Image (cartoon, rainbow, N blue to C red; front, top):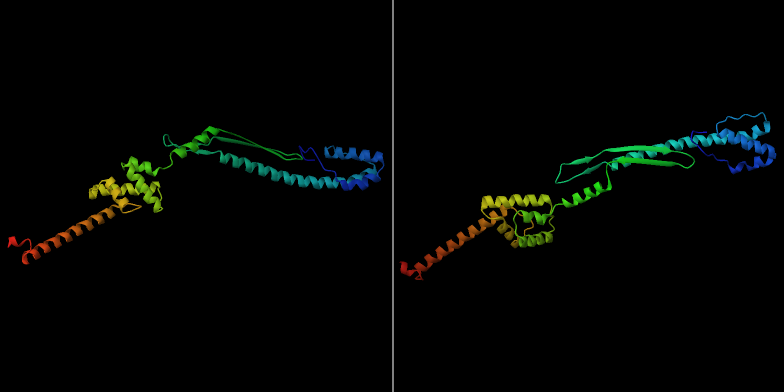
Length: 254
């Protein structure tokens, strides 16, 4: 028998053989079987008992080989389970207000106890408590990026923020940190190069239904206005000359 194995199987198909044995031989056979499975290495000179015991003995050996193979599989499964639990309990706690802390003091003991019914127990001793895991979740939740708050912190008026976020939602624009950083950079460029303050720029973006913002767009709009003003001035001058030469309202200048 294997070490720590506390049970064995007697198969019912041996009933035919047992019934043919005298009662006294059956009793001695039963004792002989128990002596064998408890590693007492029993011997007997009784021919009838030895003949009856031999097929039972061979079946017990076959069962023992199967048991040893299964115990190896159970042991490997227990070790893998312990390693997986240890890996899952190695937790990284991120926090904005303090340096990165890696909680990795995980000591894992895997104990596999095998008998007729397999028992696998894993004991994990670590420094990661439920409170730490909860803190990790709350910390990640707290540092989730807020697009509207970032615009407000940047100095954009609240009513303009609400209106522009509505425009962006209609255009299916994403309010990510990357998007905000691009907008922030372009608004600063607009102020420094084009002398258009950020709130005026956002207001213009709302009027134009822009979901994004580029300083070049404002620059193009300024150029359009300048060209329009020049065109209007040219038309006005031409009209004045026409009035002068046709006796219009400027004929007193002749």
